[in-house]
Length: 515
Image (cartoon, rainbow, N blue to C red; front, side, top):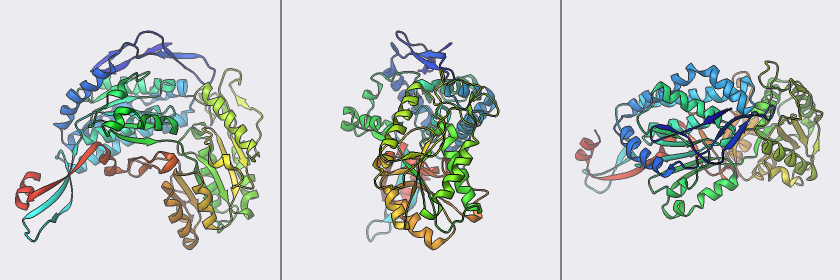
């Protein structure tokens, strides 16, 4: 068992006192321990502001992009070691580990390319400007400059590598130093990521710090130019938003929280055609990938009544082929949940949905490969069905964060939108069909309740990405229950870490100032 340290003020530091234990979710055995007790996390914030901020601020976007490029390359070089850490502490299959790690390196590479395109400047100029009076010389331009504080990133347990890298990539490119805090239960992979970045010496001093363990009172010392980005439960997001200093100093907060994502099959689809197969394939993947522990996983499945039996049969058959067990085995496609608490929560969540009127249509009999249920945190892929979706209130209120989804019928396109809306805001909705007239009402209706809408149709059935794939070029976030936040989205993501300011003055003088 190893001890995870925190990287603060340019040094690896070990906490004292009682330590949190990280385990292997396949067998429940301890693999690491960590603590932040006794560490000066407030000093770490000051170091990031005072050292990391000026170092990044002195660099152009192109130069910051080069830093991200080196980060991506350094991590890719140790991909196999990172995969092993993910399997050991995250319970991921090799494929799911690659999904996390390649998402991290890919996002870093994308923002490295964006930095190159933005070029040798240290600020962004928006638009062509505006004439303010009758005089053509009295002019306004809007600029974006980096905030002078620190970006604190509190990440979820399910994507230790991707979560760290995607937030850090945007903040660093914008010119803000980062203090990253991974979820303690699965922090081994994030620790290995940081270990590699420090070893490769690719970061400016103070640009990136890592907190392995509790944040203590660190968040209570955030100021007006700092930002806080959080991924996790809605209740924790509400708590962070309500911190006295966050409210009193107007600290920017971005929250990505719970999400009852929906997949909708249109009535123009026929059983067995390419769109039907795409729908079944994507839905089954979203239920089982990362053992359903994804914020973008499909939780609710809506289909026309005439197709519901065909969809149920196809999904049950698809899920039955998924081998569950020791994720280190090549034939296993789904591993355990990440923690014992996750196991208990998912089991309780399934009972809640069943009590609310759903029924199970998949088998619950454990069929584990190379693992035992006694020590591991395993749940079988679970498909529920609720034939009265408006009566099954819990399905639209409670997210079961595991390999669980509920199949339900809908009538018209308008009703499908209304049913999805019962989830009170989501990260992604996916719609499958090829009839533009039918799709129009549904897609534009769902857009009001979703951060992203994926349209699966005949022309892209064999080439589209799955709904759960977060791409750095598109915004990630969603309204309402999903947290109301937004990150990534290419250049759009930089807005959170920069201040937009209107400059008013003599137009030729403004042009000279802004280059």
